[in-house]
Length: 286
Image (cartoon, rainbow, N blue to C red):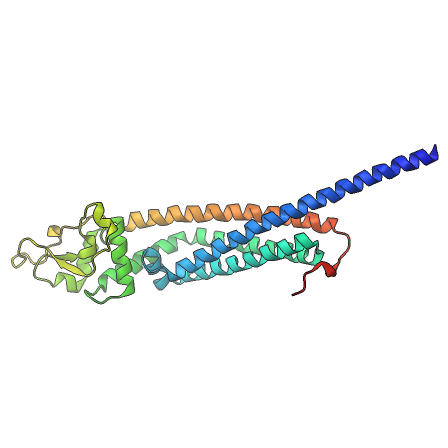
């Protein structure tokens, strides 16, 4: 009788061990797939930060050239993306080889990244008003100092924005009346990128500099802005709307990444607690 009980207990213990081993295997490979996705997300964040720095054909180039806040944001994205890719690699290595040291490092770094993301999100949320003020002052200064035929990168970027968004100036087209060179023209002259165009014309490269109207003569009234064949709506609302939409996408991605990070922290801690012995011979040697 005692022998039968011992055999039954042995079988029960064996089943429990097999279930525990199977649970660890499922967690291990699920964590591996999760970290593979995490590695890809890190590459996306890294690429986004690099795009902010190198883009020269949109409003982003104006902000990253003239605003220190946007430069800082770009470097933050690059740093977080690179660190996320590193953590994804360490997580995959620690999960497959069941190395507690790597799993513990993975958990700690994930916690640091999560804290950094929350801090950055709160910082940018409470500095949105300052960012909008910076945008207004940057564009106003750019319009005031705009020079015909200079080939400046910021001027070309603003020409691209006005032509693609179909707007003129910041608040309205009258912002261009603050440009001394433009208003000193005797004929009807206007910013080329502000000219009203058809839908098909937006696919072409925008014109740069100042253009003379093919009609009328401004010798009597001078360069009257009311006679300009341009869009009269300013770019402020459209650009801010574009930024708001993209910031919403960015915040959504960050929230998704944060949820994935929390899940990764939970899985790594679960696996770390289940791995009872440290076996450094499992770590691949290069």
